[in-house]
Image (cartoon, rainbow, N blue to C red; front, side, top):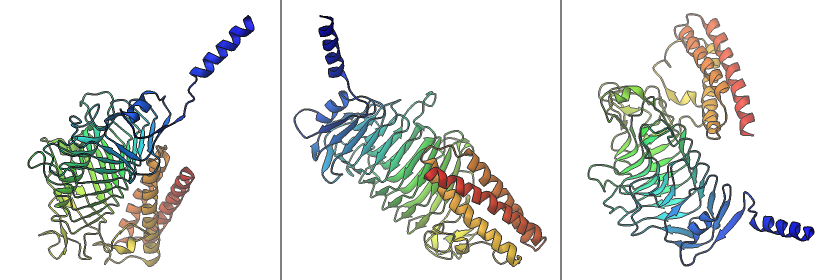
Length: 443
């Protein structure tokens, strides 16, 4: 009798066991098969969705879930046409990752919405989530915000602000709002990279939206390696109101938009607490290149503006034939070629110092260190997307930058080329050490 009880107990345990990381397959059918699979899943599971059209809202409310199509976005469609998904994110989106949920991945779908349009087709309210390789299509005739992908929408006093989320390799277009929106008190280290965002229109709320990527009240965002074109308002818009915000815009191609990059302040005094850098981008063929309406200078150096003469500014560069820049934009030096930071292209940058006398050997080593610096900065951004500790590397980079600045000062007027050369070589040593550390992190 005891043996029978033990066997029955074992059967009960086995029948109720759900291995972490299990895969569930979903096929089109009646009801809500995707949500049913999510409801039955455990943290860490993968849900594989097979080809078909699914017209249902989806709540991804468990940590570390992966929702992936089996055959890619061309074959697997989530259709919110005629469905109102609420106001922005955190509990109301079409594909929704609510407040506090972490580690979710959504990959390989076409997600569409039509009037009355979903306000956010994909919404993120948690940390460390990834939206990758999707096609997100809006409705240009929408009367609402009609945002493609949204991170944020929590209270300013919230103890948890959506952070470390990744928007990677998506195609986002036809929204009567912004294609990708990070704000309403999003947190730090949110990365938007490798996306193509185009043909978003000024609609919905009159006078607003029409931006490719919009950052508004977010503490930390990296916008990198994206292609933005034909957006009615700005390719990239930054509203700099979050205290101590750091917004990096680099290695993007921004063309054919109403404004390439628009920076503005929302409330008096808010801009002074934010840092925005716009470097190593291709910004050309826009109605206006970089327009800064905030009363603080932003760094927009080493960009390609569409012409070797640089951007047009009526007093600082009246001979520039590239896109216009406004006041409070530091645009010197500028790139002389498309993708000015793609290689060790320090020689492809126009600088007012280039015509000054400098000792040949010191000049060579300064340029070599500058090339290393660009490579290290690019690799550092890649490693940071992997959530690795880069504090030691950042310290090496800071030390190298300080040495380089001193080397330039020594050498610009041939004051002491020997000292400048020594400092440049020391900077190279720091950067080579940083490069080795980054390479080991990427292995």
